[in-house]
Image (cartoon, rainbow, N blue to C red):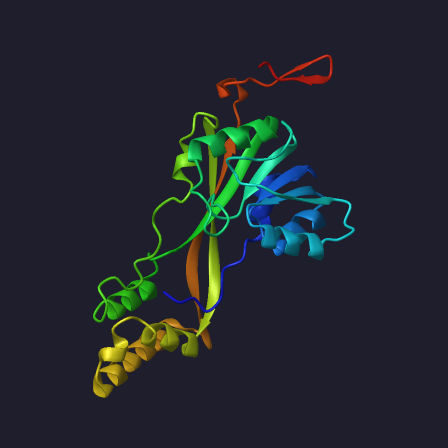
Length: 258
């Protein structure tokens, strides 16, 4: 379903994901905007992406910034020293650069574990539309007259493999509610842009738009509605005991048995 705007991550959610105290964050696949938000909160950021072009854009955006370092690297082959960060922040799925080899998920989970300090965690989120609101359910019913798959939404947990990994046995979760403004024009555009509408005759299309306007009029208290989303946040806490080559500290120095 087309969205009038992309929901943004609330400040309270970001603080929950990475913690309130300034730390070093391994930002994996994060946008320049997200990196900017992290540095504004006092965090030091190690920005890693498998796509060299994205890394170049980040490096350009933060040229001369003493708290941002950029590295090209795949999640399953991170070119980093052990224990380089207190938090790993994921913005979306673990994925390679375009046309690259698929990510080896188990290897990626081990790499993330290796890069975290003891007591650290991987954090991520997923935004899904909340279909429990009555006017949204009515809109779904209307849309499925034309396309049975319309507004089916995203229900699969895109981080399910990581959250089931032995490297991260303790998971914390917290949900936030997001409301995205949607105008009458936005709603009509959502309805008329669905697959199948172009094959309808003019009379049927007019009726579809009228029905959409009725939904808007019945639900809107002012000139716009608010489209509800659920922001599902999680923190996966690392357990270094599961590493094949365990990480330990001795006399203040790092020791990795081989």
